[in-house]
Length: 126
Image 1 (tube, rainbow, N blue to C red):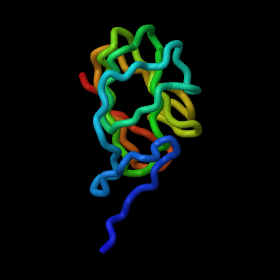
Image 2 (image 1 turned 90 degrees about the vertical axis):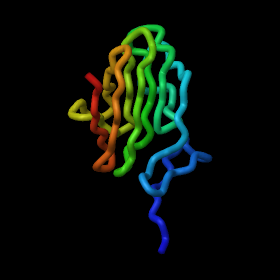
Image 3 (image 1 turned 135 degrees about the horizontal axis):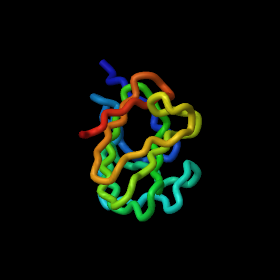
């Protein structure tokens, strides 16, 4: 019996999917958010767990991959400022609307999960 897998979104060529969960591996630490923020040119998430160590100014940003049902990513903001997480172009996070950022305060952890293609939902730590 063949194991179903999710297609790899552009920019993730070379990363293996975990066919049991449809997640990318590995975990990545020491990430620097894009200075000045914004969706265009934001630092791309490359692991299913991403620890952002450097958020030099409020609103510096990272970018989620295209939202495909079954995907899940956890972002740890270990930086000193609030971090903006953008969806891929055309996708949305929670009820923020397409292409709008989700802010993660310093020291917080958020899990982004996709139940429906094109939409991310979040679980935020206290």
